[in-house]
Image: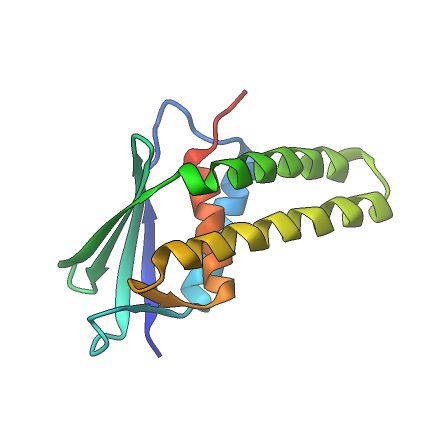
Length: 156
């Protein structure tokens, strides 16, 4: 089964996320390394890929390399279709992080359900934007969306 074997994020050192957001990043990378489906279209003979994620201006940059670190494809995807979803997700994550510290479990679960819904919407947009370029499943797209959220995170 084709999959990602390594995921790297190039972040702005001057705007590093909060510890809670970094925890989301680490969990997404951990989950991706252990279970994912990622097939680069046009490279069906390869089963293992390295994904480098960064941003440049208003673009998400996805560089897909072979295991030997040869660049296979680089995609520049506009962040505009994801901006509102990222903003909504950031707001609800902030609510969730605060809720975990002080609210009862039923309130935390309600916020988490909303968070999952927005997360799924972000994953669907990622899948749409990669259509014809990369074949992936919903769980992999969810984890990639998490990494996009972390990459674009702005401390207030």
